Image 1 (cartoon, rainbow, N blue to C red):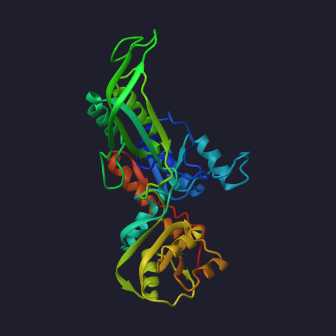
Image 2: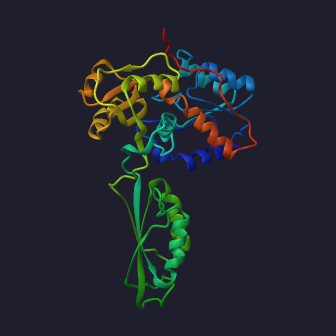
Image 3: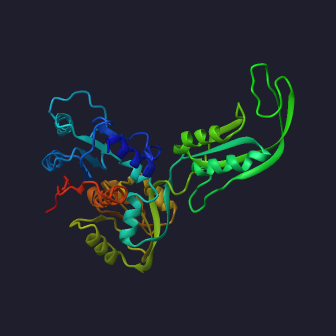
Length: 364
């Protein structure tokens, strides 16, 4: 297997379009045509993780956090980022990062948190915008089923719990081909009227190329009349954070003790909320202060995230419990998520979870 094949697996699972604009995901170091002889999975790519990969003779590191996040203008070894990149290149080790592709994934970081806490009836806290497109295409009536099947096979019309979704309208289409044309129906320079069907399908934007290819391959016309545009409505399964419900209400202290055990942390920060028992819970792995107001508007009893500052805790405003469980702690199980997916896709390949704990924060 080459690195590009591994990238294709990730693109199918967690498409590049799921990434936030500010992020840096995909292959960050290495050559996509290099052979892959072993994969080490980690939350971060540190010097210790790189050393572990070298000792194992694994030449691919799959990391949740990107080692290169902002512009890298020099590689002199002055910072740990420069040292990691430089040594990875010298040892022909590729580094892949997934980050917000898994933050926004319907079964990514926040789904994993919900699962471990035991939340049910989950939904997305902040749906990602620009994830949907619509295709409108005009097809001869007798070819409609063929084209529609090709579009559905390419993923169009597959949203949330439903597949093969479409809306069809019948009408008359007409056209006149010039001297250079090669019409499927009728003759050159002849005005033709055809019974046509207007096919309407919605699809996730990352499928654009695949849907277009399927359309052009299945459509009988020399020139395909179609419209494709982005939708303002969001695909509700894709986005930041999750909201769910506990199977049974719980008081604040018992819930905090439960979280402390689940996320194996000796330190949880929370506000002065002393309200009702907790039932409706929001979660957002990593730095989630930007979602406090959205969680409040959704009427949750508690919001679990990380990296809250002093003044953020005031934003609970007596309406919800704000809980900071730590950045590493909230995302630590993401590496298991990646490992499980790759192990299913590549059951006979050398894949390992790092033994290096990359959390830079210590508690006393």
